[in-house]
Length: 381
Image (cartoon, rainbow, N blue to C red; front, side):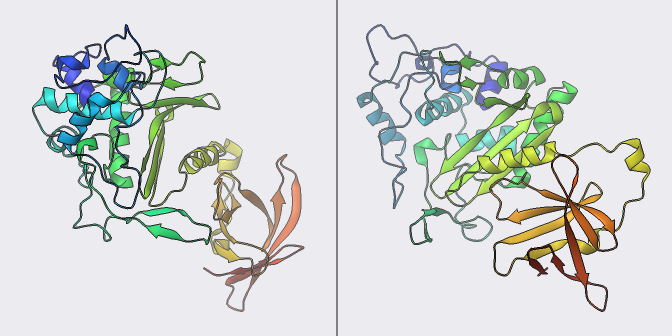
């Protein structure tokens, strides 16, 4: 988005050769006759550049990212994978160079540009292009490794991404990212200029690149896909000890943000939450006029002492919804329909009644457990 703002202001053109701004840039061509690498190709990951700079910074235990001098000195020894604009190849190296273009053209450090242009105007006070070590282990979550065979995870060391600052290591919060998303929705809804022109953001969120097999579609900086006929815009993030995902449906002004301080796939939660929300139906006039029973007394966490995990129960659209936790797919809920007093029936997928589900209260009228024909659930909270 920073590059796009510079383009709006006439300070660069997306189809310019990056060497126009980075006179130090040099890399071996994949084959003779290779054309220039454009800024646009960096943003769509079609530059032909390899995925990474030639340093083992993703490998522990120290995650040693190169500084600017090391990064630039090593680059001429690397070789491009493809001709520019020939294939999609996700490239952290390419996005690092896009950040270098931004710094060169703006005359600011990456940190200053981010603060002056985006985070301060949007009130994103907890978003920084580095790890704030004074907050590490306090307000900032520490990072953990993949789960090991013995069921444990390693606590990973903090790190500085140095020359790769523009592509990795930005720390933030869900609240700050929600401000970032709300700004985009506001821009698209009103058509007004606020940091960026609405037309620029819309352009970024349309398809600019399709691979020859038509299976990869990219916007300018954004991942673009379709799910159940709806266009999904966003991106995922992976750094040592952390995973994140942002997935928006601009048409519905709906976004899901997931941040995890371990190597756990976040996309299953973003897609699962979108699937869950897709099940919410607008109430009909008849349903709206029907008094809603008091279902809050049944809400809470229930434990299956022998058979399995906890079950979360909560009121939902005039019924009760049950979700088994932990849940790989948050949309896999079961629904209970009130029959009378403390007696419910499961609602089958076709809307018909399933088995009975009865709650039990103590002498004070407080719900303490629930019964199905095959098991008892103890209310624990």
